[in-house]
Image 1: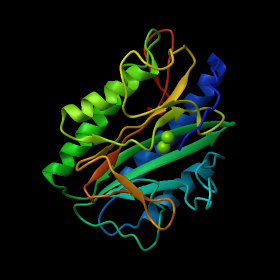
Image 2: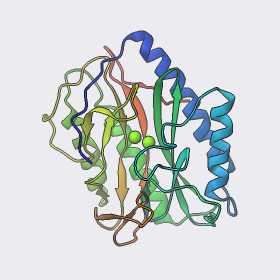
Image 3: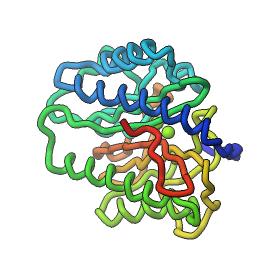
Length: 256
Ligand code: MG
Ligand code: MG
């Protein structure tokens, strides 16, 4: 994936709309988390997301995206599936699985993009640690979303946190600007050097998304042309928030 997409600085009014979009997206993820249990299919999760989107007059930016067009309103990625898993009636969750749920909401022309990884029933200590490390990396990166820093500071925060815990970050998939488009500039890799990259400016909005693998950083795409898995089939996790740089504290647009 590569792009030189434009960076769009948002006005305070635009940030208010994006915050509303983010609240709806948070509601979707909270609902999905509450219904995840053994026996539920990933298509059931998708249906629950679509019900909430519809009740707010919103839709998902994922559905119909790309080539071949993505068929879900959510990405649901189980265990070794890192990102972009397609919801399916045939994919039943079982005790001990971990499932990454990536949700998008378009509200009044603006996109919210966030993700969580959730354990199904009782999960292994290794899986618990993976979730803690991935979510920890997300908050370490959010802390860097301040004026005076650069995109490389966000990238380095993710890489250092994850590798410091003995795990690996993806090379092929990145954090990204978000706004009227799901993917805007700047592109922000999960790895990089502090002090490098573009300066962060007030009104920049970035979907920060650490994607973490236990074994190695190598991935491949399944025959469905979407689902990304760890090449060694080790467990993977993904957490994401859309975050705005402000004059003060970072603003998590997709917080509840
Ligand atoms: Mg996402
Ligand atoms: Mg994203």
